[in-house]
Length: 586
Image 1 (cartoon, one colour):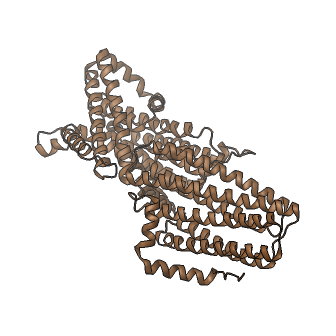
Image 2: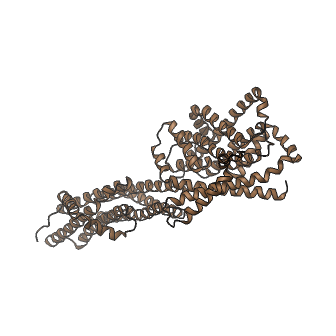
Image 3: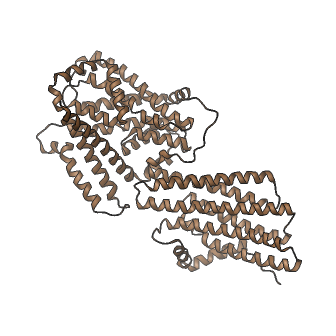
């Protein structure tokens, strides 16, 4: 084996890793929101968690990536630590699929159909199909693009595997290599080699692929390969460990569970290997092949899962022993690890925006109450909430900006645009609520009060605004387009009653000769409430626009009014019955 063979091996590894990245990207986009829906359906049932972990790993072809995602989920509060244990165990089982695909390289036959099962035979065809699918569509929304990406990534991966195999072929007759292999007879050395190599390249699939390529030389026995595979399982934990830097305590414990599972799994595997070597000593000394490597890899994962799954609560307890509680925890609104899976990241942005909206409602309700009974302590709480709402906006917009730089389909891009607009509207609603608080503060300091009739009218306007805001938040949180259609007619009713309230107040001012500045205070409160309903209309229109992406917001509003005049008018009349105000005579 010369220097050029080493260059070829390094190039093959590079192609393998790049192919894995491209293939995973395609698979994740094919899965789309399905992975997020699977997470939503996750219950306390550990069997479902096990199957979910295996399924997610098969989908993105990386147990490390799944664990990194789980670290992000726990850090963001999406999941509890206890929910992740079964998923981690399942992900280690799911990662064996890659080794089975790679084992097809070892098929030796002159039969046409068996030869077509070899990746080197069918991967060029898949590459061609993938390129055609990518070149034949310009739309990111097309289903062909992620499928083409997956096929091309798989072909690149298999090409890299072929390069590694061909570069290692000369080792079969190299006496120096035979001497080196004698060192691997020590199981601990083999485990260490598997661990270090996997830590360096941060991919157990790639290190297993390298081992399968090496096994084609016929120089690796099962006794040598088994400890290396155990080391690879431990080495793959490095990605999760690195990702846990800077996260909260429970998120660190996710990585600790991953490490504990694989270390204990290695111990169980070595015990089983010792028993097998006693009973079938001749068999484990035989030369391994890619198929046999896949079998050993699968046996390790299934044996570890079978033995440790009943004791998953103890794995969680081990993580509590390894990672101690800290006094202060830094709050995390959105974890950037979620960017690994855009569909889940977008879903979490919706949830976080929903939290922002609920906090905005608290600010609105408390601010309006302050017009009647001003309380400095409550005012302090409101101002703290407003600071938190601003923080929500900054974090969400920054996160969405990074997310928009990912390779997204048209549907996800539209969702991000809708989110950015809605976040801005929720923040502006909070600003109007804070302005109402400032008016309440001014009235308190100057000892101004509203008349009894004014207060009764204001109650109706406030109650209407509260209802339209509640409907808007519900429509947003539950993605209820039907409810969103109710917002626009409701907003028109609020415009009407606010107008009547202003007219009535002006006439009362003229009759009772109320101070003109007190009149301005009431008019400003009505303006703020009216603008809040306008922003609710914007949010609902954004939601409806997600199903009419090509239409501008103002065009859509006009379309909603003209689409079904009778239904629109009927909704207006229904809301008027509940909230309409009478215009007082001069």
